[in-house]
Image (cartoon, rainbow, N blue to C red; front, side, top):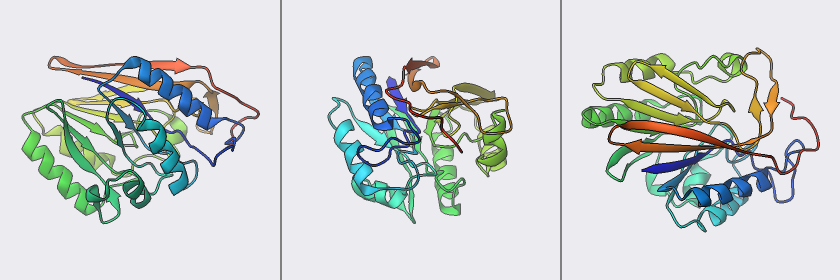
Length: 254
């Protein structure tokens, strides 16, 4: 099974350059490449909107991804609104107390789609996750969430915008007899982090990529990142494809 994962699009209004970057055109170019990859499905990893959830932006995104000849799935990032997303992407049935999370078998492989948009999980989502881990403990599990579930040595993001429940997540995964693969974004970098039976695939953005070794905000480059994940009975492998950006008029600031 091959999965395409796009994240951190940071889309603005129609015709808007977000801090000088044509993010809508970047997203469309990424979708063209995804179509050429012919994956089993596409997952959008959150921060679809640039600042806050906007129904018009979500509606435009849904129109674009529904043109593709394979299924698509969405999760929320910290710049999204889970309730509006559930409405626009027809996932109201997966909304629980304002959080959008759900489980699906992808070609028989257990996949969990989590909501870390608040930088942490509610007690209700934790209980749900714990129950699924117990039920799936004899299967290798793939998880899609916006935040990396553990520190990733990306200094600026680890210091300011990390997932606030890393210890709890690691404790929950540590006792599982299976392998857990987390595909995520948020950090605007390409990176692989392994911790015991946990493999974390940090995915670059379609907006800009950050420098990893500085405690202050610093853009490394403006290439468009696309992650392709291949899940087989023998394990997980993944590659990242980069495209040149559509348009840059000024530097991104934080």
